[in-house]
Length: 171
Ligand code: FES
Image 1 (cartoon, rainbow, N blue to C red):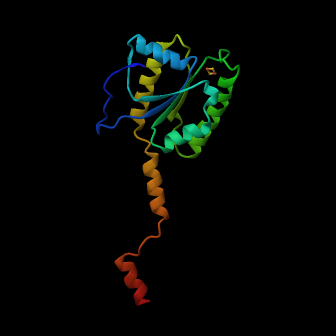
Image 2: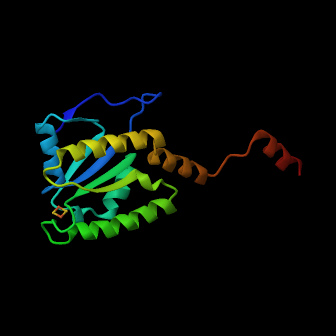
Image 3: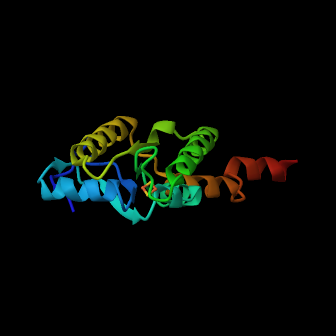
């Protein structure tokens, strides 16, 4: 895959985690090209290869966030170039739906990104990954697993404080 550099550390040492779903025929090949060409980009993206961007089920994206991703990047063939005719158009419609869903959940839309990157565009892979790492570093961690724990804690029945117990007994 691609050549790597040290992650850019924020003040706390935190760096964003990106789950990247790349189409086998274009963006994944471009990422490979970036590596072969020794183009250095940030090492924060974990790439998952799929045969087409149209294979990206919205559930994959939501699960990535639920398991600790700070951002999700989807790379597909340019419009008109999809090897399965219209998989990327399907992805585009799902992307709009996902943006709305994230907004409803109070998650910044910019944590998800869809890019058309052909097999020859290794430089674009580098630019997009670096730019996304920069954007997410500015946004900070999403930490959905931590938020889930907080929400679970709010649902636990709370034990009354000493003062509350005293007032219960006094009445
Ligand atoms: S084959 Fe690349 S997006 Fe469909």
